[in-house]
Structure formats: C-alpha cells, structure tokens
Length: 570
Image 1: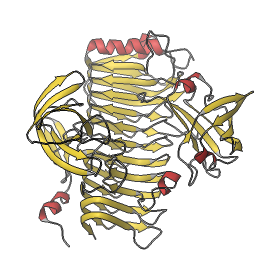
Image 2 (image 1 turned 135 degrees about the vertical axis):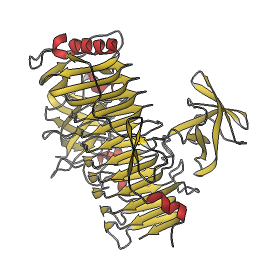
Image 3 (image 1 turned 180 degrees about the vertical axis):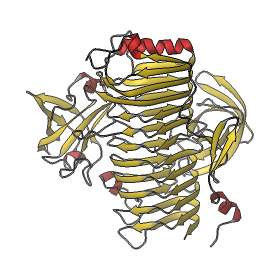
Image 4 (image 1 turned 90 degrees about the horizontal axis):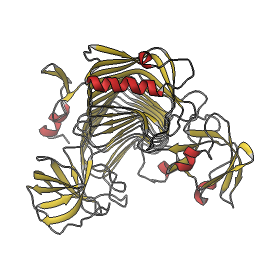
C-alpha cells in the first residue's frame, strides 16, 4: 500500500528558514504555515542593576522589595531595558499584603527587555509562592537565573510502618523538605504522595500507584514522624522502607506564569523546585524555552510539584529545545487545544459559548459520548458578552446536547490549538506520568531522550474524559530514544492499550472512539525499548506512517492498531 500523493507530500522536504521583515521564521514541510524562531537577544538602551535598588547578594537578607523596585522602574521605562542580577545568592521572602500573592514578582506591558542573571541564584522562602508573572509583554529574554527554595514545597523521607487494616502508614521525614503539617500543606487543595524505588530512589516504585491520596496527616510527637491516612486500594501497595514524598501543590503558581505575551525566550535557566510547574503559558505566542533545566538535586526525591511546561490554548505553540526535565510530579509537557462549551443554542447557526472566539476561528464540533466528529465550521460573527461569546457560524447544527459538561457536544477551536509547536533535543527522565501529552496539531517531536517515565513517553490523544484538548494531527515524531517509559500501576491498568508511544482518539468513558480523528502522523527512526508487548499503540487514527524504527518489545508484534485506516509500516 502506498500513501496518496497528498499525504506523501506532507512529509517530504527539509526545514526551510524564512526571513520576513527581519524576523526569522521556521517551516518544516508538514507545517501548514511558518512559525517564529526563538529570539536570544534584543536591543536595549538602559541597564537596571538590582544592586542599585537595594538588593545585596550573599548578605542573607531579604531582597524582595529591592527587586520589586527594579522591576517597577523597568515598567516605567516601557522597554529597551536590561535588568541585571550580579553573581550571588538573593534571598526572597514575600511580605504581608492585603491579598495573597501567588508570585513574588510581576512585569507587565514591557517590550524589548532582558532579565539576566550573571551567576545569580534566587532563593524563595515562601513555599507556596512562585517567582514571576509576565503579562502583556513582548520581545523579551530571561536568562541565566537559578531558582530554589529555602523551605521546599514538598516533604520527603521514608515509610517506617504500615497498618493495612487502618489504611494508615507512618512516615519519617528526612528534614530536607517542609513538614506535612506545615501551613502550606494544610492550605493546599492539591496534595498527594508518591512512592519511589528502594534501590534507585530516582525512579517511582514499579507497578505501584503514581499518586497516594492524602486523607489526613497527624504528627506523632517526634517532629519528623507522621501518621498518614490514605485509601484501601493504595495502602496495600505501600511497604516499610519505601522512599516517599508528599507535595503541597498550588495550581497557577508556575515558576513563570506567562500571560498574553509574545516572543519571550527563557534561556539557560535552572529550576530546582516550585509549588507547581515551571512554565505556565496562557494566551501567549512565540514562547521559547531553550537550554533550561528542571533539575533534581542529588539529595532530593523530586523537583517541581507539577508539569514543567503547561500550555493552555494559543494561536502558536511553544518552541522547547535543549532542555532537561527530571523529577517533576506531573507531565513534563502538556499542550492543549481550546475547548468551547455550548451554553445556549440561539438557533441552528447561532450559539452562546464559553470561550472568547474571534471571527474566522475554525471550529470542530465533537460528540464525546461516541467519540464522533459532528462537523466543522467557521466563525462569521463573534460578540463578547459576560464570561461568554455569542457566535454565528457558517454551518447549521440541530438537536445538540449542550451545557458545561464533559458529556455534552462541544466545539474545539482548531485555530487556537498551539499550532507549529517544536519539541527537540530535550532529555526527559525520572519523573511521574508522561514525558509529553500532546492535544494539539502541527508539530515536531525530534531528537529527544525519554527514559524512566512512569506512565509513558509520548501520548497523542484528545483526552475526552478530562476535556482540555482535541485530536492531534500533522505531527512528526522522529529520531527519539525511549527506554523504560511505562511501569507504574496506571500504565499496566490500561490493559492492551499501553505502549511508550500512545496515539488514540477517545470517548468520555475512555472507550474506543467511532471517529478516526488523529491523522497525518509520521513516526520515523526512533529507538523504542518497551516494558510491554508493543512500542506503538494506535486507536482511532488514519494516514499514519511508521518507518525505520528500532523496536525492543515483549512480543514479536511491536505495533498495535485498532479502528485505523491507511497505516503504512515500512
């Protein structure tokens, strides 16, 4: 069987840099349009040295207000500014405010700026506060900063006793992190524990749950000894001497929260810990993360408390290259497409919807119960309303099930699907869940190393049971090396639906979808060592090319497919 000429042309050709108005663009043959490349420098006319505003590295005193003053001066300048952190250790403790701060610093409405750390290390003292929010900024480079915490936003140690009947276990903290009865743990709405391998505590425990629910924590008199109540199905998997960590996660508190920004590059930064993820990208385009490290210190079980790179829907996806992602407690990378709930059907082509749509946005209408595409359309009119948008579309749909519920018919905004994302030459290792969860389109995943990831390496799916993205398409997965990706209990619980590379269209009940929604995927020249029978799992997909991969699986049939069309294996 051969590919049609249309599909074949999608994948041939080389990467072509394009110059347009001085901006270098990048367009592999399968991208539908060019994308911006990372900027690594911008012209500036003024330097703001944080020392001149009162910061004093290495004096063990609080530098928070001084750095706030330096950033405020940058905002007053409006741009063309370099903020310099000279070499040394800066202590940052957020003081009292009328409302709680999620981040120590903020920068808004600034263009053409550089924030540069010349060997600077920023130590945050508040374990529930992240570093910085950026809003409505453009053309900026943040580089050379190392981030760590004085009081870690997690606790770690080992299990010293287990009471299966009481659904409790006794945990002894090693004193390197916070205490699980501390205020930041008590106030966290998202906290859980993780078990690690006794022989190699860089790995999660084999065939064990990747999440230990925390129902109650009490101190046992000794300041480092605690009784933890969990659930019956988990307590049976916990054993004495298991290394154990517990996180106090604060969603929204990414080290950098990037909101409505354009052309921002994070370059040569190191993150050792954080109350959530590292980079939270919202409504932002042209964001690049280059040569950064989310790194696990030698004496720590984990690094970040959440996803390293969490990308909510945008009109252009991120560029992620040359980075290290290790020890984090959720997917290293999660990239999404915009979900649009239908709040009201005004007519068969006019609806009140949950998202802020634009004229000419292209939408797909999806039935998550059967996993079926109802149809596609384009937005002709978009009228903003309170927390909603009234739209008129160029197609007509009747008898829809509507509402803000994952079982109802819903639109996905194909125009806001993080198009043209790039993930290349990164290392993913020793962490919880997936290396990357892709719910977006038009991308390249190339030259990465993925190893010791508890639930899998590369997952392309629409995640209908947790609706936050749509079916991926037009993606090249090439020259990656994958080993020991998929070994925790949630991986093995999937039954036959497991492999280091997992590609599937799903329903709200996690069943096989009627629709072959995922399409135009090329998987080439990868080295895949699998713990299970297959290296690649395909379900609900079409126009797939699998070519020249080196497979080591637990069966003689490394590729599994169901409900697929036009799968070419070379």
